Image (cartoon, rainbow, N blue to C red; front, side, top):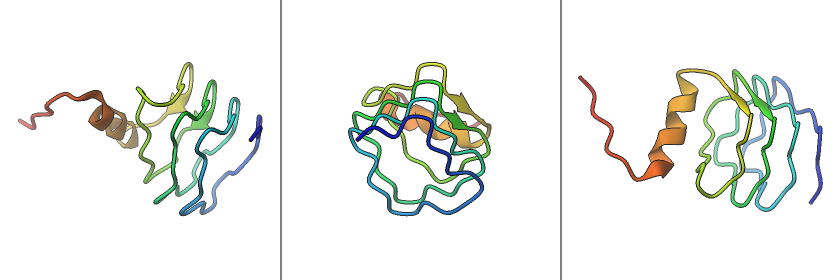
Length: 87
């Protein structure tokens, strides 16, 4: 599905299926993405700043030049098959 430049800002997009969608240049800023699915999704230049509760695996999706905010962006590391250690 082609949803380029879609704007879903400061709202709730819970349990949405974004699998295989073209979301390049989409604006999800400030949006709650709980239980939403991202797989083979094009998020090139998408804005996910202030977005929360997303689970996006960078090895299974295109995230080139996408914007993310900390601390939520730390969730991107879970898909990298690495060990995170808190000290």
